[in-house]
Image 1 (tube, one colour):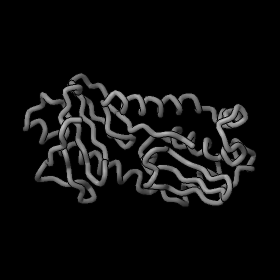
Image 2 (cartoon, rainbow, N blue to C red):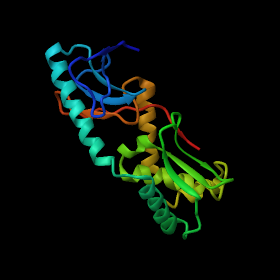
Image 3 (cartoon, one colour):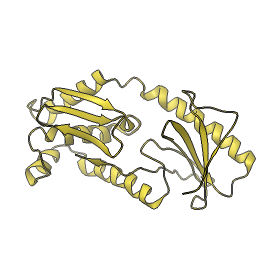
Image 4 (cartoon, helix red, strand yellow):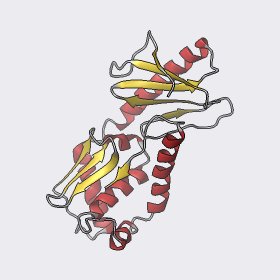
Length: 207
């Protein structure tokens, strides 16, 4: 993996250190993600220092706007969202004891403990499309009925009309991470010279 180089003169919206990673694989795209308390801006290796400075500032400002947009998603709002999904897809019978955001879900998108009815959702999903978040919630709600990934479990998940599309989105995030083109589910992509959009991902799973 290319070296991470501190970018002086700018900090993240919460005072984070900003690091730059130059990648020969990138041609025209720029992305920013959070990693271990820092902000990492991935740029093409061919970019000049002047372009780097411009893009770093642009991406940090974009991350700040994104933070403001998603900061209102509280645990209470997440639990209410799960309740509505239960009403819509499980006749209200999926009743978790708690549904909370988790900053410790480093290897999975969500998890459910059927024994005590707790559901935890990776806070990286705050940045993702609503259908993707809803799919993860439905996935974990289904585990309240079926512990394993059985055919009966997938039949329950299939009640969510956008399940395949959401799974494809998450698979794409995982593929991008394996390919080395992205930095995590919190990636904020930027258009390059041709206007194409870049996002990436850290491999995660649902349990």
